[in-house]
Image 1 (cartoon, rainbow, N blue to C red):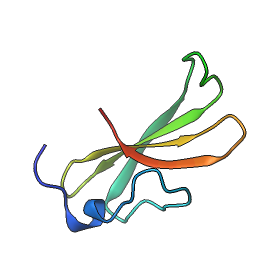
Image 2 (image 1 turned 45 degrees about the vertical axis):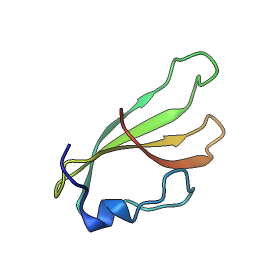
Image 3 (image 1 turned 120 degrees about the vertical axis):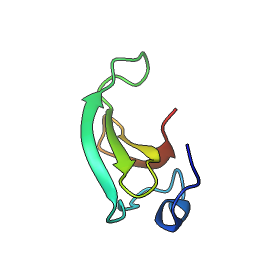
Image 4 (image 1 turned 45 degrees about the horizontal axis):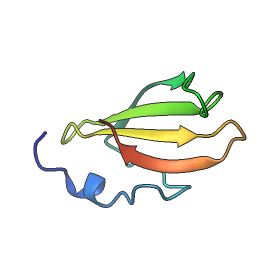
Length: 71
C-alpha cells in the first residue's frame, strides 16, 4: 500500500461514531460467524484516493466499534 491520503490519516481507529470521508467507498458488508463475534456486522471500505482498506464493525447489540485498517 502507498502512503495514505490526508483524509485517511485523519481517521482515528477505534473511535465510535466516525463517519467515512468523501473518498471512502463502501464495498459491502458481512455478518461475522467467528466464535464470540456472532451477529456482528463488518462494513468494508476502500479509499478511492489512496486505496487504503478500512473495516467498521458494529457488534450484535448495534454498538459502533469504529474503523480499523483491514489486514
